[in-house]
Image (cartoon, rainbow, N blue to C red; front, side, top):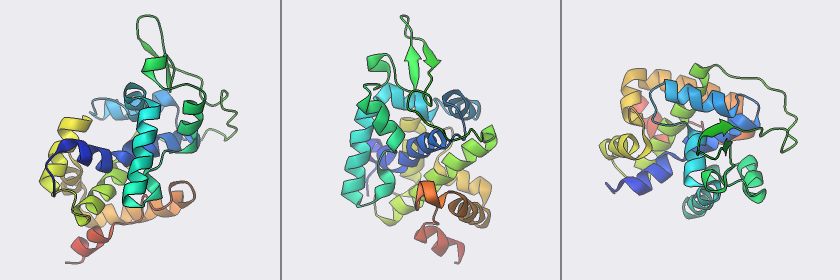
Length: 213
């Protein structure tokens, strides 16, 4: 197991960006809606703003490397992110990504959907649902990471607070939710999103084991 924050954040925090892009693809929120929901909930930055800062191409490469290293397709970047990279919209470094950056470096939400000819009708989620979706995906991944021997729960919580700007680590969130309530929400989300999110919300085996002890 490791206490190094970078591999923990890259693995456990992966659903934070992947699911945000998938929500945008599905018309479940605009760039501004998704980021504002998280920033209002106490997160240091929204997932799409974070992607623009890191670089969409850099993040895409990291996601593909994770998918190959762990043999898990859920880590790979969604098609929308790949399309933006192919269009040269790499984020803050190129002046356009999910946001457009003016001469002073200020971010303005850009027109993503028409640019990429996306025709899915908008069915926006509430801010509370946006936050819940991404938090539950991170919690589920945290349990998988523990089972894979990546890090212990306290190290994961510390890394996600210090390295990802989370107000609470995933296991601290579980303490507030309760295991059984968490499993119930994950099962419902898995049914709702299985066509777009694959096994992202399929209850982690370790979580099942802990709930039945």
